[in-house]
Structures are given as C-alpha cells and as structure tokens.
Image (cartoon, rainbow, N blue to C red; front, side, top):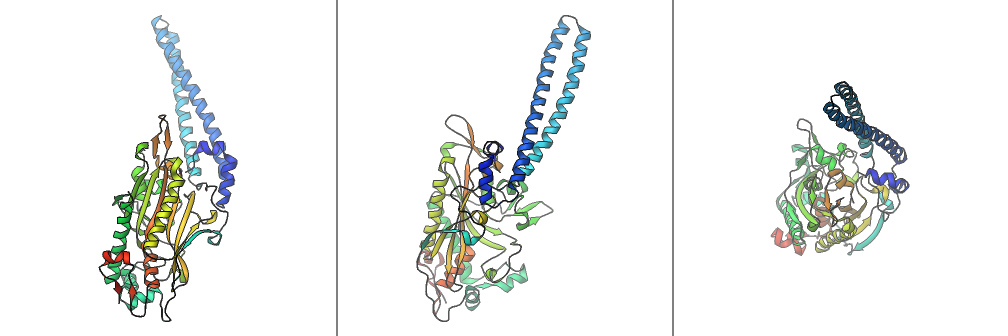
Length: 424
C-alpha cells in the first residue's frame, strides 16, 4: 500500500508512475484520498482543540474547588462533559474517514520504478538477457505431455479423476525428478545464505492482505469458507508475513529466507493450447526466495536475486532469457519485475519459470515491517521475492529439450539427486 504522506507530497509523480501501469482510476482515487485526508486533518484539529480545552477546564476545576467556588466548579464540570461528548463524536468521525481512506488506498497498485518500460501487454516486455543454444531435436520429438505418457511419468487423467483438471499425478522417475529439483534448489539457496523455512500452506486474511493478494487476487485463490483461510498461491505469502508487525534490526539486513511449498491457483479464465500438460496447473511445487532489506540496497539485491536464478538455469543447462516487465504486465504489488523464461524445444516457445520482484515499501507498509536506522528513526524496510524455481515448466523443458530417440537425458547436476542418468 502506498504511504499517504508520499502521495500527499508527490501527487503528480504518483499519477505519472501509475500511468505506466495503465491504472485507469488513478486520478479519481488519488484525488478522493487527498480530499478525505484534508477532511481527516480538519477533524483531527477540531478533536485536538476540544481535548485541549477540556484539559484546561479540568485543571481549573481543582483550583475553583480549593477556593470554595463550588457553583463555578460544577459549571466547569458540566462544560467538560459537553466537550468529552464532542471529543467522542470527533473520534467516531475520524475512525470512519480513516477507514474510507484505507479502503481507497488498498485499491491503488504500487507505483512502478522509473526503470520500468512503458507498455500494455507481454509483447511490450523488454528482453535484457539471453543465454544458451536452443536444441535441435530429432524428427520424432514430442511435447512433454506425450513424453510423460510414453515413459509413464505423469498421469493427467488420473489427476482429473482424483481432483480435477490441473492436478497431475507424478509417478516413478518423474516423482523422483520433482523431489530432486526441490532438494537441488533448496541446497543452492541455503548455500547462498538463505534460511530454510517450512511455513503453513494456508493463510488468514491478514496474511493475504499483507503481501497484496487481498483484495486484488481473491478470485484466483482457493478459499476455505468455514475457516476463512486461503490455500497459498506461493510461499512468498506465509514467509513474508513472518515479519508482519515486526521491528527488525538494521544489523540483520539482508534477511534471507527460502521455502519449498506446494502452490495453489485457480487460474480462472485460462484456456487454450498454452495450458496443456504442465504449462498451467492449479497445484504445483515451487521453491521461493524472500528478502527483507534496507531500502538503500533493494535494487542492488534485486539484481543479485535475478542473477542467482539465472545461475540455476545455467546449471540445469536450459536455454533461457530474462525479461524486464512493462508496466501493463506487472503485478499489483511490484515496483520492478524480471521474468525468466526457458526455451521449450518441442513446443517452440518460451515458458516463464520465475518472477523476481522488488516491492519496495508497498508490502512492508501493509505488514508494518520496520527497522530503526542509525539515528533511531523508524523506517519501513523493503521486501523482495523470487521463484527459484517453479517446477512444472522446468520439468516440461527438461523432458522436451533432453529427449533422444532412446530416452530422456538428465542434466549432470541433477544426477546425484535423482540417482539415474536417463529416463527410458
């Protein structure tokens, strides 16, 4: 959530940057917020004036009683009673208008960094890096959804029977490959100084609100109505919420956490060829990295996180590219996002496998995640997160890119984790 004082002092800049995200209602909402803020401050002044007058009269009552002026003292008591009633009314008005301001602010997305390119669709994203050689496959090469049937690796139909479309059943060597990838990603993360966390895979409303999933993405989350809990769309949500209502030590920066969890997304409105097989699922596995950092370091750390994910893809011997997302393709909460995509040789298309984002103070303002600087002043920290990595499309690319006429080769780095070199 944007900070009100920042909006007040930088209205034109806020509107300019929100325009990069193509946020249509920006001017109307921002103007409404500022008008209500003026009203709130006027009410607060009136409340403060009434309180000050009541306090002054309260002091006079004792003095009047001392000199025996009981009648005047009683009149003064009556006056303080009237003032207390006014004060209560002002407090109720303040609560009401503060709630209205808050409700308006949560509808406003984060302002994008000045580094974010303008644009409305994924076609406007900026390719900033590309690595590796796209493999040339043999004449009878198949997409992963056919390979998984051929080698008895994933049963999509069985998943439909048990739960529904988008909930595959992994079997045999593919189940082991999943486990191998999870352990590989966690080992690499902990070697880089990330503390491994095993969080809950359900969260409450406060947690969903804290990281910006609510009220923006409630339609994409699985909701358990009886308990009013949500299945997590990513480990980012529970892990970042560890720091909700916490004042961290500046000396602890950067705070680095990683977590493996299953992730659940309704993916409402998704259809067509791009959702076949592992391309888009309702349940999938992912290792997430999260950092809470000093505001002065967040963009430097974003680049470090982006490079870290790139190194994982290099170790997996997958051709990939890095995109800087344009304003129209960014998430609600992000200030700057890099997407990393791997090349799917059998589908001849790029598949997104990671998003690495800097949220600046947008999440931490909601979370009230703060630190005290060297001068003892309390400031908001910055939060970042990244997929490192999401498994389904990694598995799809590994199966497709490494297929031969006799089997599917396993990248060397995964062999010690899998216990086999080839799927055949």
